[in-house]
Image (cartoon, rainbow over all chains, first blue to last red; front, side):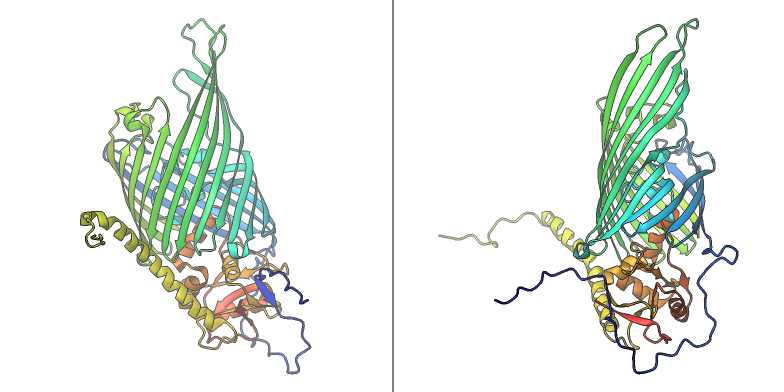
Length: 413
Length: 174
């Protein structure tokens, strides 16, 4: 009976030559004695050289009706600045450390406070497992980590339904641990995965008039992202999750000055889901993402000498976009997207229960270190417009159809 | 009995047929460059495979101490994008690039990485400013790439068919 053939095994990525007898012919002559670049190391420390990169962005925004992102976008605003510098130092083949300092002014957010955008120690045990400790960017969706990196994307504004600029402090980075890795799947492509857990250090929420903030904390943030690189070159499919809890305690001013102040405790728990699809090949980028963001707000209010009252409200938003961009020539890359935000909140009706954003961008790469972008948006609805930027007007009373125009320039290296 | 044919079937107004036609045209337009790039890949790989001669579009070279003889194309791309960091024997992979104005790099980028040099630069901008990783060093000449490969045991680079290799090992594709 003939032997059955052994089961086929996937070919290893690299094949090596079998051991051979010493060649009879003399070995190839060594390279000629010419100037040789030694392995790059710092002369003082013996380490590879410190890597430094930086960018500076300045933008302008003008909206036709509602103030958007910044306080005075209707009259035009240049409060749209981002600056960062980072340092990365490899310590060994497996260990690395890095730090990025960041400052920004986007409307009332940022105010040019310098903060450590990220810092970490990164140890890679193997391709399939690495560990990072410190403050790291949150991997959520395709582009959350580059929300503030103008040079790394086509649009000036990423789709705000999925990457809200004004929630940057809540979504961009966490302080704790992250596990990451990459698995080659042979004929099935590759799998990139990341999981993290820690807390957030974000600015305290601004209390309403008559309230004083006593304590604000984020007990936990955790989540992960899995990206499957399909066998079709340039195509990847992924899913992300982020869970977060934030607690805020306030005292409230009593209506009767003789009474003791009341207490107001808020606990908000977020569960954010996102599915992602991207096709990037040659000079074409197509992307689409869809997700549900769920928030539960527990409120406990206690007036002086009275029993505490509790209430719970929930909200689930549907958020999505489709985007495409193509580099026509090396210095010009137009892009378009449509993004939607549909908050399912019972109290919202009419124009405030949706926002549809149709955007078009021209990205001009003037040279390797400087770019300019022009962008226009046609908006339907006001679900993503802040009342606070519009003199406290309710979203339902704002204009339903409006335009936003942006220009931005970035220098980077 | 009269059989109805497509010619006698009632037709919808022309405008209603434009939707699918436009969709197909867009799909064809999107796929066309990809098909072209794939054909280019085959040409480049055919010249690099086996015993690459001086007319090869590029050759993949490694340190002579590296035991590898042939390599998977996807593995090379993942190594240059730093998704994989280790050779099968555990040695750290040290990819080295040519500068972005090099024609060899442009060809390499499209054929092996499936992206233009500008798109790859964008990929690295994302990783640099997200604190994820740093791009491979960029050297100004193919001679420098050869020297870098000769002096770094885990190095992998690419050069055109004409440059002298001084003993650097050429890898074929699986």
